[in-house]
Length: 426
Image 1 (spheres, one colour):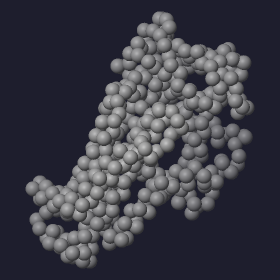
Image 2: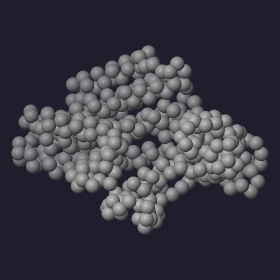
Image 3: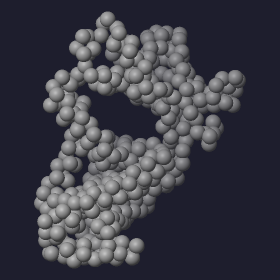
Image 4: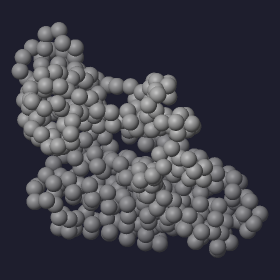
């Protein structure tokens, strides 16, 4: 443990002496104060606030991630070039401890930068602003629906022969995508119901919203007329719906009457118009209920941003242990580019059945890269923070365990495996 802290402080001191931390803090402060004057919204105060919150703190996180990735790839390369790495490794300290201490030092530096940016954001934003839980209907997952529909789909005479000859996992993936976009029709005078798991702390006296997006059968813009009601176990929250299709609207629900025997957490839409309405339950129906405040949301977002930096730094230290610094830098930034473009590649790939074996292998690799790098490429918490969507505690716990604990341990172990095999170390 003593060796860990010694290496930790040596790495942190080297980072400070290189003036990298000072420059990062200066850039952070400058950008946080300049963002409101540089960014341009659509003229509304809410749009401007969302734009500033998302891009100021998000821009700092992106800058810190790039700078720390560059430093991480040189964590071992600098010592190797100066012939100091051999002296470090012959001491009675495990290679894993050396790598883990270097990762921890750089992550600590990144946490300082994120905290500094969060403090500036806290000083200029109302910390008591309400944020909201975004609840989705309680339905089986798209993958579960795909498994349930697979046998029926493959036995259907209308299913193309090429699809029947395709590998099951490819067909299941297509069915899962179809389940995600499956529409539910609500005919004139009819009703549709969706069940939600309301939080135990939900207070029906406070504001709740239904977030809806309607469509018509022919894809044309049509008038929507209907009624919404939500049973909360004690009272019923209702609202009239009147807008046009193809628009996402937040509909405030207000207490109207006792709920009677209605099941708790059921949202009902009754179509009172003259047009059949269509919705995708998994995409177009959300329930927004009060959570805590912007201050707590900012804290959770900051933890997730530190987790993203921990994942990036861990990967960079491993590359620096395995490769020379120029090669490690090239590989690291190539990985970032791949992470950024992977979703577009998957979305625009023209061959849904993946008939080309070489392309199929490439798509598998791309999917794995997109899944692993999704929090990094999207700076995921910033979108939720900017539109006052509650960053759930379970998300923070997952990010902490996966990116701050597991990823550094795994990459430190991998670094320990490759370090002794470097020709200039042996």
